[in-house]
Length: 481
Image 1 (tube, rainbow, N blue to C red):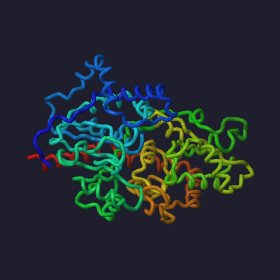
Image 2: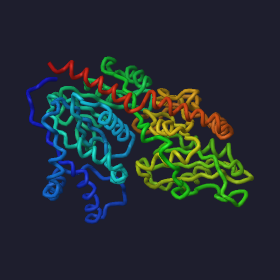
Image 3: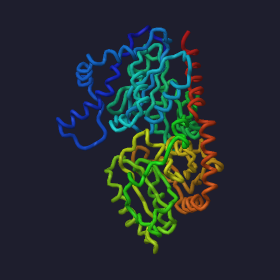
């Protein structure tokens, strides 16, 4: 897709990241916005006024972060929801940090741009200083479109032309960039017809697993466009040897059961942890059924749910109590096994300590694109109990985890994937696995250790960065004459 040299793509200055957060506070005070952690994409006019205001105090930072002229002209512009804190966001961060930290003397420059999901101020504030510094640096990279590979890292509805308000990707359409890559995935057994058309407009489509290679081709995406590029997991950040467990009891709300111990002393409990957004796909209903049917207070177990809203309110305690009532569960004679909810924001820098506080990680999701909390838990040497279908089939084995077999397939009955199919977890089989993991702690620890070994060997930043860089260099060599 060669074209005459273009002017550098206009870029906002890096302190626009800070300006965004300040603007949120300003709008909240001025217009009494509802209490929400999300804010809409900012209009160019407002950003420009904020940028102008801060310009005089930021010149030294701009000069320090400008791209040196000695660097190669070839550019990779990675467009993703870097400020959202969702699944695509965390995956995009893992790619750019892997490439930046691992590839020495690169033959291309790397730039980033916010695109896709809504921004979250809490997520940005929870990033480490090093991550924020890297964001400033890469956000300031200048790219000429005719020398640039653009990576549109989001769901296809955000690709050019976007179906909702977001920065278009690619920014100027498909003719100007040297090459355009769509990075995406789906949690069901097929891809929507409209999304297939959008995938086929891309020069290449990167998917994370063999499962997706199969479902995308079967749905009609041109096979020659598809490449499997696995996700990296930061095994250096998610390293259990570096952290002490977080006191999750101080962050969690008890919504069912009792805190009191049998002896009156603080007792050691086997802690199951699950991290997910509150939606039906994640199988929270199956998890609660399995846990409450299998355990009682006398089993000395605890279930901690770290969750956040997904098109719903955040009154998770009431949702759980209503679910228990509607399911007609009979309370055990010894009382309910305790269920805790953590619904406050946990900063990214504190996530490893959450995993460290658990004995096992459980997520009976009906479908996953990849399952980022699963690989993070595995990197932290936790045994995981998860559905052996969709994305997790890329890394779950009998040796490194407790794969939950598919009981049956069920039809998606609402939402954008209505009419698709996904896996239906078995309540009874999950009960057996949870009891087995709790009753065999040494075996569970052994699976957790094997899980970390597999994460390091197959998905470490070094391994995946080499894979990504290899694909990028082949693209440049084929398209630059």
